[in-house]
Amino acid sequence: MELTRLVEQIRKKKSFLCIGLDVDLEKIPTHLLKDDDPVFAFNKAIIDATNHLAVALKPNIAFYEALGIKGWESLKKTIEYINENYPELFTIADAKRGDIGNTASMYAKAFFEDLNFDAVTVAPYMGKDSVEPFLAFKEKHTILLALTSNPGAFDFQTKELEGKPLYQNVLETSKTYVNSENLMYVIGATKAEYLKDIREIIPESFLLVPGVGAQGGSLEEVCKYGMNDNVGLLVNSSRGILYASKGEDFAQKAAEKAFELQSQMTKFL
Amino acid sequence: MELTRLVEQIRKKKSFLCIGLDVDLEKIPTHLLKDDDPVFAFNKAIIDATNHLAVALKPNIAFYEALGIKGWESLKKTIEYINENYPELFTIADAKRGDIGNTASMYAKAFFEDLNFDAVTVAPYMGKDSVEPFLAFKEKHTILLALTSNPGAFDFQTKELEGKPLYQNVLETSKTYVNSENLMYVIGATKAEYLKDIREIIPESFLLVPGVGAQGGSLEEVCKYGMNDNVGLLVNSSRGILYASKGEDFAQKAAEKAFELQSQMTKFL
Image (tube, rainbow over the protein chains, first blue to last red):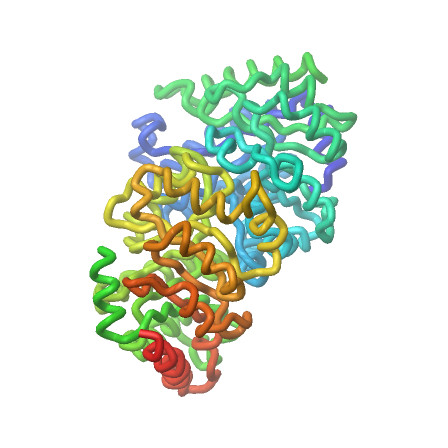
């Protein structure tokens, strides 16, 4: 999906909400467990109930991989269902992959071709030749981990590397990669105070922002420091939306939670 | 598998060879493509022909993921075949995963429980809470990327972070993680000159060393600077062994290449 189309959707829906499809069999309504494919049944209901409130959907691949082959089947059915019924939604494979040259190409093929996601998250540790194979897919987007929302972000990301924090080195170095215009970045909402510096380095890039809600990030702070002329933000919520209810009304309750967030977003648009 | 058992195997076989099962359908003998599961047929033949020469096997997950559900089926059949027929082989899922808390646990479950690998490779960028969920599996091993063999390693890994190269920070910080005794590290053979410094920080840990052969790393240098009292090395070769021949004799030719490497290894043991 082209960025202009994503921005158009954001303006139209007055939303920059990304819903994280992190489906955990221990947390979904028990009545779904009787279904042949409870994960897909859950996703389908959530997507049908919330698609008008969100502009992006982001399955975290770990949750599917943990279920083995059955999990990959659920993932494939989910992405096919989205692409067929809601092609206006921007789809992100939250895979955080990172490997060298031809191996990175294999991962890129898996997510961009076999599964046909619009974007995939990628780790920067192995540098240029682990990122560029993803960027080679011209109509796709590579979302590089820069400053993550978890406590472990302080282990290395915020420490000074040659005079500036590692995450700023990642932002600056990545701008020199071939096809860097296809880059977006993961910036945790719990690190909103860093957004001013970040916007000086990458004023135009889209940011995928997890950590609002359960992890304690503030939507207001994120918008204040992170928004640009094209909005430039996809704010993700997973658990807060998905598991609002364990009853038959789970999809409706999820939509209510998504509506709450989307309503807050309209204030900043 | 316990480390003492791995060391025992190394002494017995006079080998610290790890064979990388990076199966690419475009490179395997064409006669195998008629098989229902060419990837498994290829792996089975390679494993049967080389198991006495190697102590470890390492499928790079990207190659399987790129084939979708069929690829995961081949991977599962491969690991089950190894565990059933050659339980003395140390198995590594080269997945380079890295995600936060409960998501990392999902990945750990996928590779340690569902697939029952002995070890998995993990990326350090997200810090402590992205690594410890893997370390929580007591009889398993977590192989952290430290200094990789690719050119992109110079983007961040070798740069000074608070007075010492980032990869050294990764080594030192990771020693403070809970259950850090389950850690091993990826150190590229192309960076053998760094091994002296590395051994000062982690004298006892096992190192997984890719990059000998095709990428230009020297076995002699790796042994000179990297070997410890328990050998402490698993040297990986993938393409150089797997694709020695595209004919009916591919497994035999692979065994010849593995024998060449193993013979060189005996000199250093």
